[in-house]
Length: 112
Length: 112
Image (cartoon, rainbow over all chains, first blue to last red; front, side, top):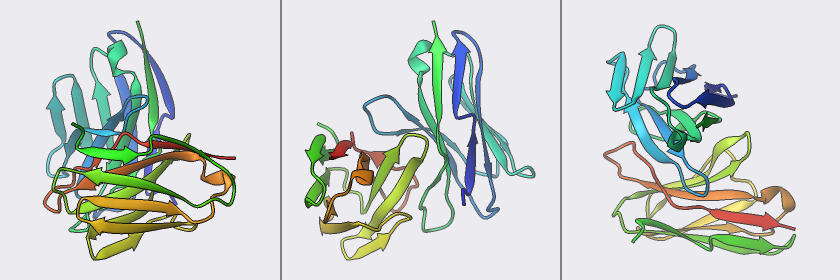
């Protein structure tokens, strides 16, 4: 079963708008929650990550919001740009193993 | 120069053929991973290795085998390729002290 559920599957946003992608997890032992960004023809690359001891982390236009009680975390892209058009994956991991459990991805298109 | 390289970048093969996909890294990382990516199915882990003498099955290892020839090299083999192994394959690396995974550019495989 899918331990990390990601939505929506695809998203279209106008330039300058806010893109929001959500993920929900089941295992409360997860202790690391990254978001990866993948451009066409490239491998995924780490965008931003958060640990459950904070509720929000911001890096430039990208923000992770984390709700431990709801077992949910989300990626917000402010002032979305056409260059943000990519596939975004959320993931989670725990402990020394550090093996990532991946969401299924969200294809984001930002219209000019 | 890329830190994680994959060869070949594209490969067309026929059902029943044995093929090998190769991954090399110059990051000095001890952990290496093989994933396959299919539309709508996200990234699925095939095999992973935490050091040269450690090989572990992922969620979809059937039909695949791996070899960790050195810390820097991790190969994926399809002993007898079948059409449903047509996919985009990614190698990734990480350091044992960090959760961040660094991906190669991918190998696009078509099995006819």
